[in-house]
Length: 373
Image: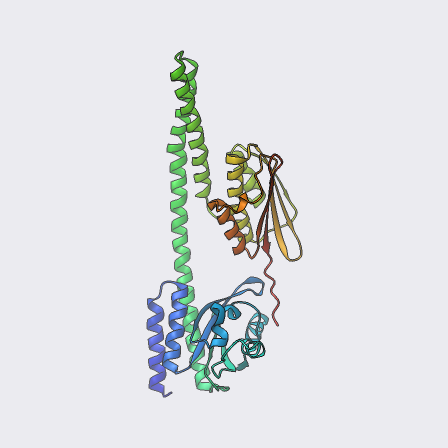
């Protein structure tokens, strides 16, 4: 590649990066354009996270052995390049790293490797923070020239700048959304909430002063429906609150229980849950407490937070009506949502319930300490 071609490549990618406003589109788009302009065959981008976690954020023209089963073997397990990235030993474009994922694919006979055995690896950085890894490869290519590595380094720096720009824009957007949510919650509390209170107590007062049984029955229904609407409004206001939990999960759960006219005892063993686990557990607990209020026939609940070496555990128990075996898998939207949130925490949710005895929900969240070979 001559100097003019290099400048054209850098300019084209810069123009592409400047147009993108979402992280996934930016990574996929720049990867495809990089391969097209350099003539390389395949590429993939990992984003790295805490606890040696990672995700496959973009890929293009992967061979059959790597793309099979919806790229399952690219999304899980470990490899040499990620190990070096996590260990801090991969600081610049590297020439060249043998691909452990290809080696595993050959050993397990997963399909055609497309002639790819090695790849170049380039850490993606923003300032001093490494946030990902760019890998590119071509059939039978075992060596990248210093000029090729320099181009890859230049592209990685551009990706880092675009990543920081998009991240700042998303933070600003989140801040605006949070401000609007807080405003809406205040408006609901100050207007609709107060009006419902007034209707409920007015109906109760009128009920005491009427003698017509039909009118009295109607006022009782108004009082009951308004009380239920008020409880639902409180739930909505709580759901509009920010996802961050500065007061701690235990206080958030017990306070929400009070709002729902529930007495919730909460026992916490872990000293501190990671923020994403707190958020996930909070949303699951909120849905569970809503279900207790609506269906369990009890105003008592117990929440226990525990941990083992591999995972965090939350258990929510009530001694209410319970329900027959199998009913937990009946397709209830709330339960489906709770299970999905548990999966997002790299965990599971299980339900045990006995009619007349009560219900216990157990949720786990993985500590995401993956092993890399």
